[in-house]
Image (tube, rainbow, N blue to C red; front, side, top):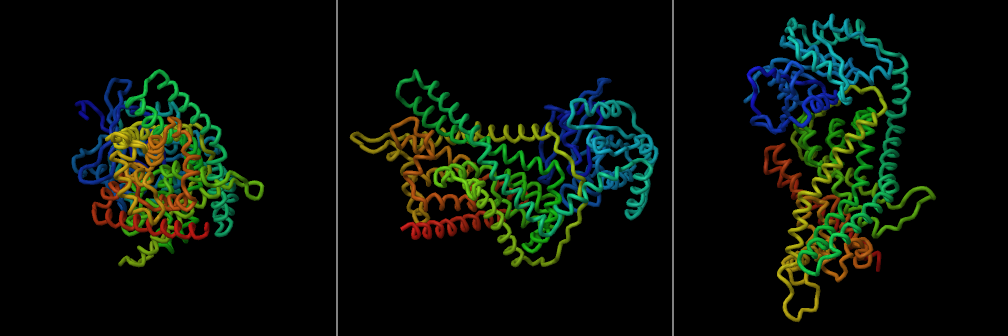
Length: 614
């Protein structure tokens, strides 16, 4: 991105989860780009906007940091950019330190540390609306006087919530006085600032304490966490069903309309057996994915997730991890790729590598279409104890199996690691707050749009490729079987069936596994395409669940479910492991142990289920 001669170069920095990136997005809108810093894998977000005076302001969104005394790759980049020593980066003209107004006790320490650099600086107090709702009173004038810095209020999630910052950046900002206080004195100065400029309502601390007596209890806290997770997966099935029925009916009607006037031929087959059979089989699971994300976002916004990390620290420590691994692993429930990238905040190299290696075992949203397809087809839709959905219980068990497997693998890695040191967790818990509906809506929109783009991009391309391989070459003269039996895909599936027969996979499943390496959701689309081309009815893809329920034994369905707990059916995840660890060795280790676990677990599941069924 070119820089105008009169452009003001501004760097946004602050503690993680202070709303810095939301502020960056509001200021720059679509005028931004994402790349990597030179020589490292940390992402670099840069954008621009035009100030009221007509001056161009270039913004750099620095990675979240707790201290300039860097203990992680993210913090090292933030430090180096601020000091002007980052490769390929010039020193910013101005630093905007963003702080969460609801948690100044934690954030002001970093503000004071940044102030010691002696650069032109502005403090942006973000989430001021939330602070006011909770009765927190901040004397902006007193805070400016005590800090010797300009202080502005912002609400990054509101349309005009950054106008005060825009106006301030459009004026000349004088450099603050550089202070060389020792780190230990910083805490004392924070206390002085809070006493001079902030009045905290007693009821806020009392309210947090009452909830934490249960949420952080070593027994009842774990029970609460388990109940929350259980209810989430119950809701994934119970709430989504009407929406799924509507999407399924809409896609079928659209498909019928699209081919109503078309004659039989390759184009009609491509639309019905390829496009609508493939994409329709995946889009129908969008409501379940959004419901899962809704709960994760709500727990994150409420301030509960850091407490869950604190609560699980002892359990995770015994497995060779720490509570800091909880957030990256929870992020991996959405997708392992951002989960692995989130490990950059883990300071200890051993804990970071272990978290990266077990993140693929978390049940990402891409597995959800496969799980729900098989559960709906083979698990009866009935209630347990007159209250709980049996299908939701099975889904919950699959998620628990992934978590337990991750802890077991982390324990084994710890036993083989040369580093046997203990790594304590130190963290400050944020106050509780009600999730803002607008924040939840924006988060759901972003994640839903990412899923739809995957469906419209890679899944569409792979579905069309699979249709081509499943259609050509055509059957020879006098052939009596389905055309797919004579195609390239059919031949490949028959070859692979020899390898996967011991775990119960038929040739149709073997075909679906190949494009599923690019994205797990593709497996459902691939099965829809394969079975559509294997039969004579164009509408067969809409009945994929009942079709496999009649053709597959229960042992095969359970074996495939277990396969997807472990198998690394995502090449993008392996690529991110290579990028984050800078090691092909780690990639091969991850792929090897995941495939090995998948095959052994599926073999045991298939053979035992078959014996019990006879």
